[in-house]
Image (cartoon, rainbow, N blue to C red; front, side, top):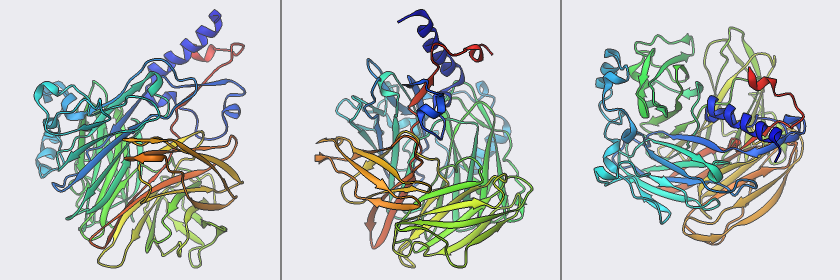
Length: 538
């Protein structure tokens, strides 16, 4: 390898190291060749993931699952490990700049949402592919809750009760490209009972969550996780049907180094609103963020962040047996906007009668009941702003089941699968993989990994017709034991969106959770040797 090529790779690696985990990700749209003008793409060499604290319920049973797909070009050594956030946090508040207001917040939330006790659980070393996040000794505090052994084989760890920890993890070398982690929690009774699932995410500095609530029937938390060695300072802004809500302690929230901080929304404002948009803005540092939305009667689930504000949005994979669909939309600017509503069904794009166009006022959260929108068929909601220059964020709340025995899940506007995306914790029964191609026919390859306890990978290809959503019959590993990963890879130059639904039943209630599948951002563009590298010197 000549010196010029070495310099190019070193420059790209240095750029990633300086700017953090998210900086090594590929752009959200277009094929690799289109994005880079013919430049090569290489697997990322380091990445990080953050998992929020799973539950406040003593009845919760949580499974963490971690996986890295086999990636061409990702060779050599490496590690991928997640550790309890509480075990890594600084013990002295004076060292982190935590002020008196945050101490007061902690007193308001001492009923379960703070995570000081997360570190009491200790860990098993996961050498057998399965660990435990409970019952450890102090001298085991530095051992990972979950650690991968080989790319291509998922591993799991289990935790029980309200003290299951938030996790902070890093992967490097051959484990970094496409590293994915999922936590799935079952709560059998009480507020938020049901199946709650969320994919662990990278740290960032801004998040939008349309679909939260401060209503009396809801108990919603914003979970903030700081992966760094210095404190992060965060503002939480709330927007209701009439605009910004008056908040008492939503500004300047300090998140200690390498720790997690759940914030109860009802402690931030006295206003009761059915539909609220939460905007998390990081003043200093970076965090991972997710909203946990828990209802007294309708169960609950995680509300992941919406895709960035845009004039065109897709919410993929509304279950075909949904008995209620509610759209929550918000535009951050002062301009009003009309949204054209379409449903990508198995037969094509259709316009739901009575909801052809919805009006959203600037700076105000709007909610719309769309009823049993899917009518027994797979579907994805496609929104287009009448003025594409007016950005919008959106999510749908989905209900399944009959009155008195209903469960809730949330589907935010998703990012497309550019190169590859993975869903974890799948089983042969109870898993639905939904894929939509809003514009243009697409071909996708789906690979089922080996199981956590054995099995042989399997692969199938599918054609998704333009404007349709398909619940595909995903492959199952031969001789599978345990759960497995499903990895979706679209052909180059096509745009698809995907989600995965996990389902079970408890006492006649249809437990379920839906996770949109964003691109795993496992590849990074490296300039050709002939290209001008002056940009790297800026």
